[in-house]
Length: 221
Image 1: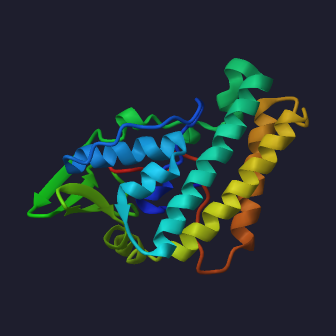
Image 2 (image 1 turned 90 degrees about the horizontal axis):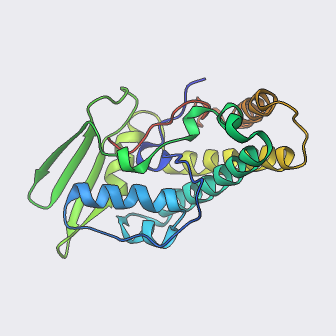
């Protein structure tokens, strides 16, 4: 399966370590983008919100992404405990993304108080990240960024709804792994894929058309 482009906030980062307070740097577009990636990775919703501007609905996508990364962390921890070095076979490599590499292959175009970050190796379905400088600090402009995703047939309401569904699916499988329901990691992975596909099929026809079983659309590298 492919996966939905929920633009920058679909970064389904590996959160295998405990959440921590991050150091926020908004001095440049690149610094803000990296801080934002680290905030999502750490599950730090307060920091993530500090780094963006947008409507309440758009901020809801940020919150939904934080919840999703928490579910992924839960699954990752359960898989490591159950399958040790074979944990990746249960979660899939797509849920292992390093925020320190989030800005590789990124083209940054800065003009006055706006900036655009584009992943030069991104798929055509990935929208660039838009930023705006406010009171000397760069912030991710969710409205402008999501407008690019909307042009590709997605909107923030759909993103938020699907992220919530995926969070529920991942959390369910994590609980089942903890209970020892899957002897082999591949069994857990199949269950995860099936659960995500079921959520996808149950979604409205206008919802994103793909599920997160492979590496997701990321913050522009």
